[in-house]
Length: 455
Ligand SMILES: [Zn+2]
Image (cartoon, protein in one colour):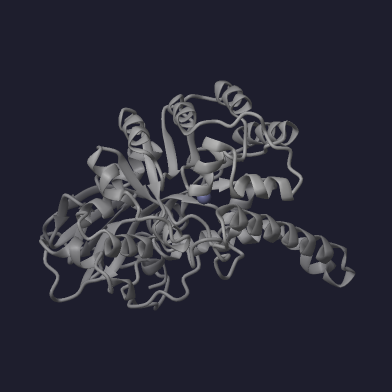
């Protein structure tokens, strides 16, 4: 027998199919069957709990996971970007100083300091219920950094942590295979294309193309690519790069994020111009328009418009005509900058697929996507809770082009799942509303794999 049958009070196969009680049969790391019945004896009885699909974070930058607190929003958006650049520069200087310190010679041999920052971010995402994430990566990122990931079972509240023995009737080999396949998140790394100066932009395009052909690992689902933002690049080299890579490569770009960006793109004035002048960056003669950037994204089979805080109605219409294009809303990051209210309902009413991301620790206090769901629920009470759950599960999987494997607990997909302790008043009818409600964030999600792996 190589299948494991889990039973829980509620199994959220998807927002439209809740099993109460439910069983999920897992074989070789994938869902083999689901059933609303307790006729068969489960191998693992999860008791009074809710089993739901792992979350999908459509936008983050793990390379900033060393920040303990978000960087202050500052007087303008370019001021915040300058703070991120300064943080990166100071960090690099500190790493170089440590590398030349002879006393630190032994400790530095083991691990690249950048790799350990990525690991820290991965642990934070995985522990808080994210099974798949699209991560914007920049030099010196390397695919083999992912191989060092080991699940960390500390701090899982509400569940027993007795031993890692397999349950009775489950062969050790099947148990270990289950844990081995699912005890880490999956990642879509998206190398970043950035640079106002032609040399710098060309170097980042070359590095990105090289990265796309670097070896895969068990944690790497596929590669994407990310032209940074309309104010930080020129379109022609990006178009040339996209023409050379497969059309199936997911592409993401920060677009219409701040008012400062709109002022720069439309008039060439404002805080961006002042920042470029202060830093001695030559002022570009040509500035791409948002419409051109949206068109560029539409040239790939799947694309993400990151943020879109200030999209015009014409641009919203342009996106709605491109079903392969999705918008990523980062609720707590949006709040960090005190932007105008997010046009979530307008986008959804236009038929646009809106999914959620955390963005980085430079603008969010942590990388728990579930906290962003709860935040969004509080700010947008008119939006159906099931749509917010979809925005971090099935819709996110569709946006990233991975719905065959992720986004629900339907048979055939990976059995990445989370557990949440069930409350007595929860019913099939009020479940999604209850778990996404304000205040529910005290009920932490825990990845099924970590919970059963440490029993
Ligand atoms: Zn971002």
